[in-house]
Length: 341
Image (cartoon, rainbow, N blue to C red; front, side, top):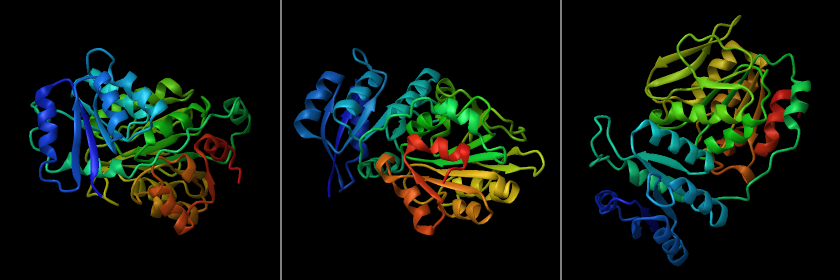
């Protein structure tokens, strides 16, 4: 099946560069290009593309406002194409929270236009084409206050893994975490360039404090620690007083950082006093690790298919028997904080 792509970017040069990415890809076809939101809206109505690449730094209606309209009126897999500035990073993080599937940087690490990417964008297009959007969910009223009264005193740490669609899911989940939640560690598959902005975005919606994990940082109640990405795995060390460990290593389950690596370390260090949560994502990273946590006596939860952007990772965990609870995203906080079956 040919994947039909619409490119939205105000720069003619960038539109040409993006089109060149797909010249030798037999399964990808560019069905149109647009320089602004108005042109893009008409082309989306006319051609109903499988995937949209969207520049968020455009004149007129910016990409964030247009993305919100797309996701509200005509949900379509969107890959954000962003600059490398700090402002661009923060906008991209917000875009991921609005439901964008992934992000792609216009520039390489030297700040030059990324002319050759070894098929990276084409692979993102293929992954995005597999996304199927379901009806969005609503949060449960007063759930934070209920959870605050019922946090299970036996829970010493919560570990979360997520990938495609995860920033949006994490935003909903962490909004329901109280300010005195157990120490929480997260591996979200994302370009490390955007990790600081994603932590900031999540911190704005959560009563708990969300920050990037750093080496040997003590893990304290009321704090949520996001893996910084790059070439380091996030793990938990210190049985008596848990702390964050960042260690270089090879990809595990295809990823650095890997959810499997995090979950296995939590099983070793915290055991039955932990809660493991596996959210939306492509592939199977985290499934084996969640099974390890379950066997160590931890309480394990997987997001259900109806609220997952991509059901790959949760499905893999469920098929292994790793998830003791399968729940929609708006109910996971209750299950995690109360260990309710």
